[in-house]
Image (cartoon, rainbow over all chains, first blue to last red; front, side, top):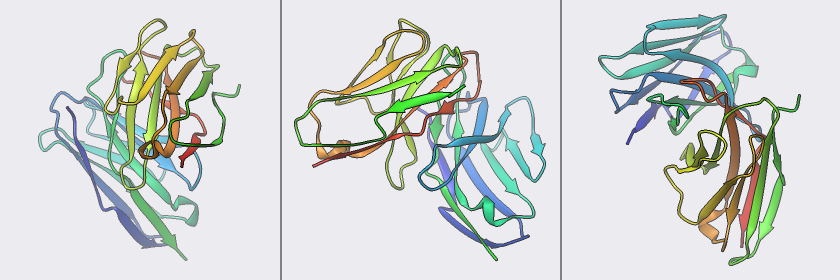
Length: 113
Length: 113
């Protein structure tokens, strides 16, 4: 089955700096890669996703890049703010009608003032 | 529009007791999922239902059963709870089309003594 590795497990940045979180996946048939943000005690919420026919996608301060050859994808957050502090999860799916997700183990991002 | 609603929010059980976690969605989604979240392990898929009338095992199904009661509702049952099942349980739903986002409920925190 699919295996998703996520690094780093913790990341501390100063407000205004950029943050990068990286994930690798094992199943070359995976074609959908969402990123979720989870604040303490809350539900995971989708922040951005990318499909395998696209190499990069941006949404304001958030961007995701995908390298299918190397089987890795990354989340980039620019101009970080304290409210960006949370745990971020990457995931991968090979599609199908249920689009089962395999999640990474999460990155705890701390944005300090 | 409540999205995905889970009940209860918290529960404490004794080893050997049984329990059913309830999940309902009001987004007319076809697919529904149950995950467990443990510290340092991300979210792991327990069972899923691609469409009404179907259920399938995920990554960690042992000790659980599910019922897709109708299109809206998907329940998770622990027949004989064990301390290893102490976790936060999340229900999610998606449209069921290929590679569509999953939307999560607020979770159920379950402790088994």
